[in-house]
Image: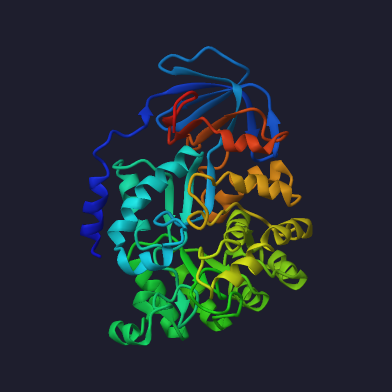
Length: 434
């Protein structure tokens, strides 16, 4: 589908008025989460001017001249959250596999308009979309103010190997595969170091912001293995080195230990899922400074759905039951080992808008609530390589969310966000339906 056609389709979604209101504000917060220290501060007044944080004043003060006061005295204010692993163009259902043959990129883009808004209203002001042709177009439409949604770092098409997780011809019968032909680097499928360079350059051509590789088999792909390694170390290094030429960082989907090891040795920035991560991998990740993005909620979701007859194809069902149930335990072990953890849900596997459930599952895994909140703020900004978000400080982006209660004492408070500001514009206020 052409960029023009996708852009036209997204424009159709802009007939309803947007939810944001832009002005200069003084937010009177009952508490403020300090993402640098991981501590909760008492009452603060956050002054927002021109989409940036102008001042952070102690206590509740009168709104400075030219600002509008917003009473959040019963709330905790936090830097806007970042979900580092979403797929905004899709959402799992028993029809997902046949929809890939029936629907076009435009259909998925239009669905993404709704999913993007749900994500923003849940308190996630930034996301990394790790696989979807529609994501760069959603990003552009949001940046142009045409639709409401989080700031997007878009991977575009994930890079796979032949038959691997993210090979677009998986599940096709032989006649159909013969008709469409074998996918290559343009379609994000590689089998050599040279292919790897071409695939990254194609993602650059298509406007991606980040590169994603599928370093092992996957749970939901129509293929037998969910954990076998699918790249050589040299292929991964070729991806990473070429990505650096364009200022890109590389995220690696990986369940199996050998594929994870190759990805870390190859220089990726993040390991996504990490199901069978062992002590050797944890030690290597600490040595290399590799981040871990667990996506516990997606693991829990697929494990639950695997119990339902007909939800997944029979080739997929045992993988979902076996692998999905393990991720939460792995996340707890990784944290205790000292692996750096950043926040991601794989939303699109589970429902969009429920992203904050990941906080609850992280705490259940033994990760402290403060660290969980840091994983979606300061840590996420580090993964993205940006310094102007993830903290509430003078000069930073005015990405601020608020919720009743104290998430450090009750992490479920994160699921009750009722104030959302992105770049100084208010998208949701207390008492307003999302």
